[in-house]
Amino acid sequence: MDFSFSEEEKLFRDVAKEFCRKNIVPRVVEIDRKGKIPGNLFREMARQGFFGLNVSPDYGGLGTSFTTTVIVAEEIGYADISLSIAVFPFLVENAFAYIIDNYGLKELKEEVLSSIVKGDSLLGIASTEPHCGSDVAAMNSRARKEGRYYTVKGEKAYVTGVAEVKDQGGGFLTLLYTAPERRYKGMSLLYIPLNLTGIEVTLYKEIGKRGSSLGGFRMNNVKVPDRYLIGREGLGLYPALEGISRARVLMSIAAIGAAKRCLELAMDYAKQRMVFGKPVISHQGVQFELADDCTRLEAARLLTYKAAWLIDKKDKHKIPSAVAMVKLMAPHVAYEVINHALLWFGAYGYTEECPVEIGLRGVLSILTGAGGTSNVMRLAISKKLLTKF
Ligand SMILES: Cc1cc2nc3c(=O)[nH]c(=O)nc-3n(C[C@H](O)[C@H](O)[C@H](O)COP(=O)(O)OP(=O)(O)OC[C@H]3O[C@@H](n4cnc5c(N)ncnc54)[C@H](O)[C@@H]3O)c2cc1C
Image (tube, rainbow, N blue to C red; front, side, top):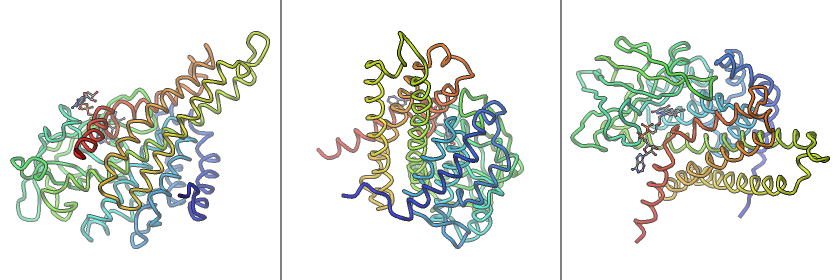
């Protein structure tokens, strides 16, 4: 067993660390207050190759291991505790550009992949609907094949990146039924550009992660070319879940990165702030909490890298429950650690002047639902455990 990163992975970590600390750390508060990631930051990230880490070099990507992407996500989460950048564009682009690269037709790859890698257009995933998220089989969206097109009707909701895709161009890998009577084997995955006729966009106001958007879109008899089908018709759930697995690991490590930074900010403060004649950090009660929090963060981090390693090994039997364990544990641990960190600041922690509240709101976005809820992760873990008997 070897817990160290390879030389190549260390190189990516160092490049990402330097870039993120120089270009992202100073902009986090501004991104949260303005509710927007500056366009030049998108372009700078694209220049670093951040949007095509798992895309093959044929389409302008770097073709790195998934573990490398996780390493970069940890650095982005550390730098941007709001998790806006880590979630969208970073993790959504990487997780789902990989799916297009692996399951899309050549025409689709040529049309969209190099543009995504360059940051010229954006990509998202749309499976949730206004009335259903966890129970994906309850979805209503339908596509009917007519010649070289699918005619699509339905509505997607709580989807990350709708405003950015609308403004900057791009589309969503959209899960819908092509044969509803076949349930899980009647779902297909279509790339749907947001500028097609018949699409209407809605936007929600988020509590956290304010630099990127959350919205939905209605599809009123939208004509989607059949070259935009990802994988086989009726078997679209499988590539969708593969992308979602990657996304779950990436958002988990980003949350861990954010918690690590919030804890460091709180430690700096607790070394300065005097209570009962000595710094807050000198009190044993505070030190014990610090030790517990660092231990739990490291445990969640190791579990996350183990899931990344299983994904790189393509260990299909172990990936679903390993990823579910990560998504169950990491956001909870990160949220609790940030909450403790915030309390160390006393009343100052309750104000917007204290940066840690941005981290608490950011991690909440992952805890509440992004990538699936905790109970759904528990279902996946227990399913795996019970099938052994
Ligand atoms: C910040 C954010 C970003 C998101 N981005 C995207 C995106 O890009 N694309 C996309 O498609 N979706 C996205 N979503 C939606 C997300 O996938 C859903 O929120 C998630 O799947 C849960 O669905 P739901 O919100 O409809 O909750 P529901 O499915 O209605 O669940 C409600 C509650 O019931 C619990 N529950 C459900 N089933 C069970 C069960 N069997 N046993 C016990 N408890 C259960 C859940 O844990 C939850 O607490 C995002 C959500 C958030 C918050």
